[in-house]
Image 1 (spheres, helix red, strand yellow):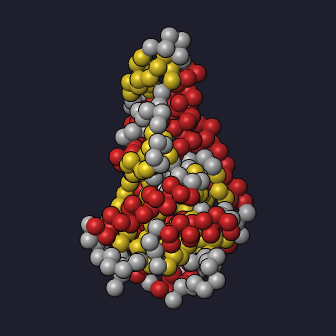
Image 2 (image 1 turned 45 degrees about the vertical axis):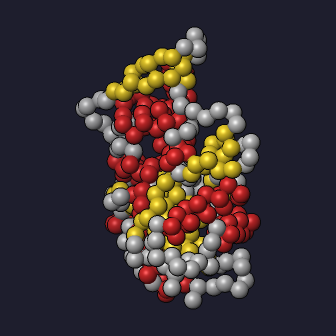
Image 3 (image 1 turned 120 degrees about the horizontal axis):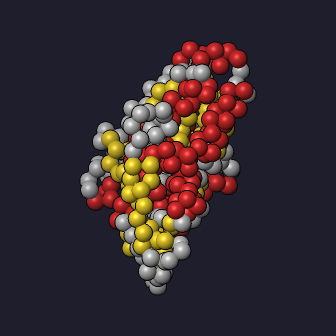
Length: 343
């Protein structure tokens, strides 16, 4: 018998859940390709170490952009690598598995077919698509099957999805191309404008994680960042403060808050009343930004809670879906393969 598998195919990270074993893969969605022979040199964390350090004949590819497959061939190879690892590490995959995979809310039919095809080619027997906000809400243990309003904001690496869920379906939603990657770019741009310093993505991400503070705390933090001086072309080190990082992120954070407000505006009043009483949930890696929950709560006048372990929330939800076939029937979106339906 094969073990069922849940795949959270994210812009920044790919996580794989195997039924009865838990999360067995949690690696960066990144692939290093040798252009001379088109062979894959490294996948996941090994490829992540090469970012910004590879010679011209090695391409570091991020095959997913804004939660959507942008490079079909590389994504297939990446998934094949991860799934084959499950066989070699003996996670109970004796035959081809049944797979549940998360997709964005605004996915098109063509993109839906691309996801299904790539998972089938990577070694799946059957594939079921479920919206990422639904898997995150289930992972957060929200009562999505009840006739009550559940609001979730899923801040990923490439996309932020805001949704109001009731009776196992999405009632109102908004999708923004502002997420973790955009926040990193904001810090890179700020360092360029403020210090004439060119920094890399990993340095920007470290600054975002370590010194960004959106709340009004009394303890400002400081971090030394290194890069190339744009005036001299030589290496340079400067100190960046939490106040400066917060200023760099302000526009993107304001856009996320406006997205939440506009989603509430199109939500039926009965569900808004539920949300006002129950609050909203933040999930995804972006929700770990210090003070973001307080900034959203202050702007919307609604209680905000960051779910425990927000990075794995979605894939844990897939694990719960795999345990319950009736739930899978309720939340799986129609397949592009006419012969396949949840059973």
